[in-house]
Image (cartoon, one colour):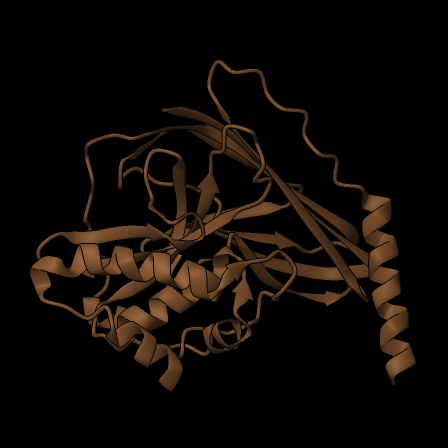
Length: 291
């Protein structure tokens, strides 16, 4: 499948920002059934390419002049569904057994996972069963959680989004001694219903290698998925992260178009800068009222 992707991320601030430095994990790589035919990142600032510890292609964005808005556009063409499945591994597998604040498990989660612990040759089917059981246990609900919601919190709440499903699944796998990692990327849907980045999980099985589980959709990641970055959790694989000096309250919005080549593009949703500023100002007023 040949997919065209256009990803817009816009930040606006209620006050002038003196300095911004961001880490962009917005460059898909060849491997895991995908081939990058072309890719470009457009932003009004200096980009410095590198590779992080997890093997992700990254860019450091530096803006050292006053600004109140940042627009980042990533656009390109990816071929998916290829038979070549690279299993290159930068780090020892034991790294992916390490807990993080977002992927800690509690007793309830470990008891849930224990029902799916099985012999090595049955692990893939057992994890598929756990994926479906988890989706029944934690319903997909937009707005139920935040980016800093932990796996324990989302599991206890019984609601979440793809990020939460990935964190919970990873925590359960690690509790069974299976190396697992977070994957950020894009998902193609025929109706264009997903206008944002997506997340799923990789689990390493000794007799197979890395296997990808998209819990939110109850399936293995395949030709409709495009991988951007991997890490221990959302924080180490998020498409954009960074710090700034000044700026007051921040407003952020993003939109994604993933379209099959040869099919007319859907009309992109406009990111309204004025609405973002109004939202940021409302947040500032609410903070003042609470003080």
